Structures are given as C-alpha cells and as structure tokens.
Length: 135
Image (cartoon, rainbow, N blue to C red; front, side, top):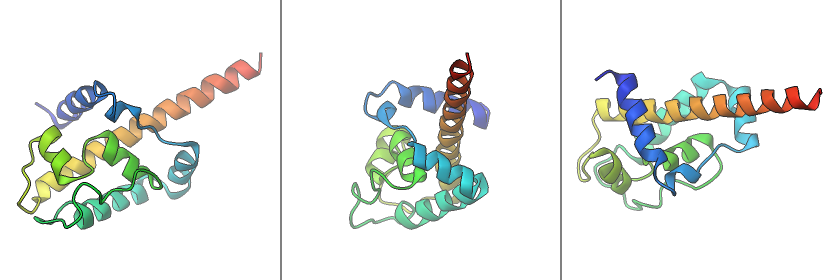
C-alpha cells in the first residue's frame, strides 16, 4: 500500500467518527496558514509532535493538545493524533515507548494531509461563494 493510500484510508476511517469529523479549520486558521505558508506549518507540526507526543512518558497525556488556537492542534484532534491514548486507539502506536522517527513522520504526514484537504475545502467554498455572489 502506498503512503497516499494509507493516509486516504485512515482519513476515511476517521471521517466516520462523529467526534473526529466535527473538527474543521476556522477562518482565522486558514488565514494564518496562508500567511505563514505550508512549510512553516509543517515545521510547527514536527515541533509539536516531537515535543508533546514523542516522549515515552507524558505527564499530562490526554490533555497536552489544546482544542483551539493553532491549526495543527485542530488537525491533531481530527486525526486522532492528540495524545498517546488516541495514537494507540486510532493508529495502533502503543503507549510507553518513545515514538520512532517513522512514527513521527507518519503522524505529521497525516496531519498535513488533513490540513491540505481542509484548505482545499475552504478554498472551494470561498470560490463557490464568490461565484454565486456575482450573479
């Protein structure tokens, strides 16, 4: 299975969860991404995952990812990558060991794919709205 197929399958699986599918980027987050650029958001994703999820033991596991603020935080909740408990449940990455670089890369790739799709949905919606307002 290709990396893209794995991400597609996982995002489809997550979309069936009422809770996970309730997360969406807010307008200010979309503007932030446009302003900073995807390369910066990618770096933020790596920074957050390495700092908040990679360690084997996390004192506040289950509470380390805010529910608002940064687009990566929203993507973490939407993709089940917000805490080690959710990583174990959704991605079969067990608690108790430091994340490998491959696991970090997978998590970041999933987060960035979710953000990319959200951005496309926002852009499509904005384009549709601008086309209908000119009628």
